[in-house]
Length: 238
Image (cartoon, rainbow, N blue to C red; front, side):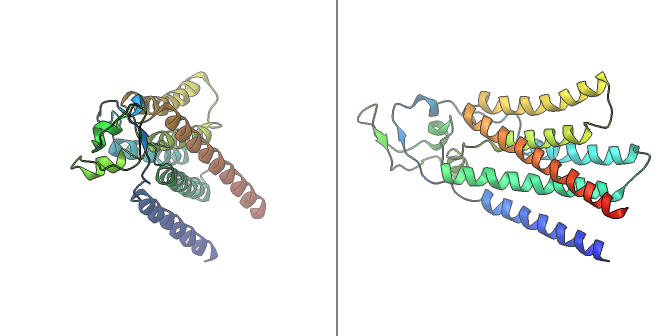
C-alpha cells in the first residue's frame, strides 16, 4: 500500500511540474533594447525546419518507447525499474523546460529575426543609437513576443535532454558496433535539430549551445538519480 502511495505522490509532483512548465511558458519576456546598427537581429524570418509539434512528439516519445521496448525484450523484467526510468525522464524534462523558460523570461534576448518578426516602430537618428522604447507593429502578437525569447534554445534543450537520456539508458544494453551506430544516429538527430535553429534564424549560436548544455546536464543528473535509486531499492530488497 505504501508503494502505491509513493507512486501516486510522485506522479502528482511530476504533474505539478508540468503545470509550472505551462505557466512559465506563458510568461512574456522582459523588454530589452537594441542598437539600430545591430545586424545580428536583422535576419529574415523563416518557419522552423523542426516544428514544435514534431519536436515534442518525437523527443518525448523516443525515450519512453526505448525504455518500454527494452523492458519488453529483457528476460528478467522489473516493473519498478520501468516506472523509475519513465517518471524521472518526465521529471527531468519538466525541470529542464522550466529552466529554459525562466532564461527566456529574464534574459529577453532578441532573436536573429527580431526586426522582421517584431517590426518595431522606431526612427533611428544614428546607426549607433540605442533603442529602449519601441512598439512591435506586427499584428501577430505571439510572433512578436516570441522574437524576444531567444536565450536559451528550448528546441536544443529538449532534443539533447531526450537523446542523451536515451543513450545513457541504452548504454549497457548491448555492446557491438551496430549498437554504437544506433546511439550515434540518435545523437545526430539532436545535433541536426540544434543546427536548424541557427540556419532557420531562430537562435544565435550561443543560445543553442546553452540549451544543449542545459538539456545534457539534466539528462546526466536524472540518469544518475535513477541509478542511485534503483541501487538503493535493490539493496533494501535483499
